[in-house]
Length: 286
Image (cartoon, rainbow, N blue to C red):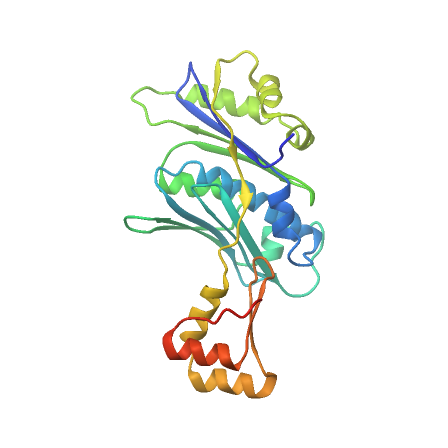
């Protein structure tokens, strides 16, 4: 079973839409880039599932960023995605983290920033406090504030796999709140192990076997980092020449590392001269 797939579905007899995402390889790419404590592995998995589900709601080509920040031992956890379901992410922390730490323990006075950046048009940003017991509840509050559409999420991760489900009322003239509450109650019976081991069709049948569900073609989810040697060279170009020359004098090279994938781009003196001469990097290999 491909474990990096997002499914979208509709209920024919109710103006409610659903999504289901299952992640494995892309999840391992994200948490494998650093020696994350177990609690951060779980959090990043839930955050990946949430970002994938949010990305599937986009009505434009572009990017989405779901970022958690605070003044606790975890200063940052972020997942970036786009309309092609390409995800990447990273977290920063200090010290030891308890396996059973909650959001308040991790982030202190924290908040979540969701940024939507279309390829064309204006950027939108929403901010909500991390004052709920779970990440899913915080994302639900974001929808409550930004779209005023009843929304429910279920997020799971165990360090090996991540998964999530999403329900939302569609804008309609009719009142479908009763249908939404009924379907949410059914979905709330889902177990993490079912999402980790069963195909989407089997999950939906177990949950909604008495409902009329229309399942759309699956969408592949993948890890993709946007770093490159060219982008690193462009970043160097923005710095003071004297600062770069000082690094060269001390180390004999300038190294640019990517937090997301651990790629390392190395530039020697000739490369630096080319960068500052015309803004283009030399073809020195990584």
